[in-house]
Amino acid sequence: MYVGIDVGTSMVKAAAFDAVGRELAVASRPVDLSLRGGVVEQDMEEVYGAVVAVLGEVTGRVPEPVELAGLTGQGDGVWLVDGEGRPVRPAASWMDGRAHDLVDRWLADGTFETVFRRTGSAMFPGCPGPLLAWLDRHEPKALDAAKAALYCKDMVFQRLTGAGPATDVSDASMPFLDPRTRAYDDTVVELLGLAHRRGLLAPVSDPVATAETRGEGLPPGTRIANGPYDLPACALGAGVTSPGDGLLIVGTCLASLVATTELDPTGEPAGLYISTDRPGHWLRAMPAMVGTAALDWVLSTTGVRHEEVDGLLAGTPPGAHGVRVLPYFAPSGERAPFVEPRLRAELTGVSLESTRGDLVRATCEGIGYAARHCLEAAGLTGNLAVCGGGTRSSAWMRLLADVLGRPLRIVEGEVGARGAVLAAAGRYGVTLDAEAWTAPTAVVEPDPDRAAFHTRGYEEHLDRLAQARSRARR
Image (cartoon, rainbow, N blue to C red):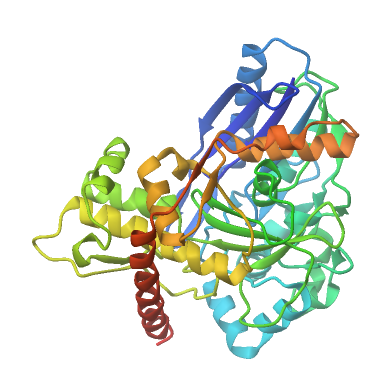
């Protein structure tokens, strides 16, 4: 069997597959996020312990030899480790907002734009550049004690295998990697005031690093590959490799990805170009901060259970009786398809007559409009696949097809873990039928009348967003 590991922000999963891509078993463990005053952190030992636990569970349920394993996980953030891969402080999450003042300063003085023009990466508070610069100013002893500033999957890979610190071109793409040379741009490191911390950046393995496991979670000697991180892994798992085709991941992060062979760091700085295992091929990524976390907040606040969502969406008309939601709930603002660290969510059109269904539908529509904005900015021209936890709601997928005005190829199951296995197979020269592994489970077509309604709603969304961004800068 083949095992894929996906170390998510709130959930760690492992999945076992047979040779034609059928899921044999899935195991998952939730992990905590600590949120306080814009600071968002995770306990690395808890995360690693969850990895070992889910691997032990899934291999115990499918007593077959493990042919190979692929590893993926959340990107960005800063995971400071010592020489053994153990934490020197809690991991700073990609959702962290403490460095927003630095990003504001770099936006004002031109550093932000200069970095984007060089690397195609639009920094945001939770990416390694601002976070490392913030730590250098406020917690220099933590950086002094660290051997490497890794990404999530890299910490797990080091602990599982005992290999030295390393990352891959996908994770390194934000914000230090030159996408043309596939190496760190030292000028960018200097621009961010981090030249004296250059040694903390993990070596870039190109192609991705491989090693054998030491026996925690997986049998000792299991072949494993480190990467790519979750966004490009999901693209592989959904079969998005042809230029112009796209993927929308409806998860904690609402990520829009479009495959491309053209590098064009012009226009408004936003998103990033994710380098892939094929030189000259990138994913134009617009990983928005909005996503299922926004809907979860509304559900919690209104007392609506997840199993009620489909009924409420079906019972509430398009437009939600005039209720509108700008779904920018993250404490670090928004990062795609624009960067606005101080942007916050807005609910308008609410009255005493508004229902829970209005609030839920308006939130789902707002997230859909944000997705449309991102996909247009990323250059979508071909087919669109959709994956992530949001696909479990059939009513939301129908709404999303209407808002986007295009068919959706729904790819269910553990898409990131599936992509991690495909990447590992490619790295080890193991032949797998990628078409069978990435086949959609359903195709959802838009309703023409509702799609026309939402085209107008999208234009209104862009107008409200422009006004909100102007207020955020005051």
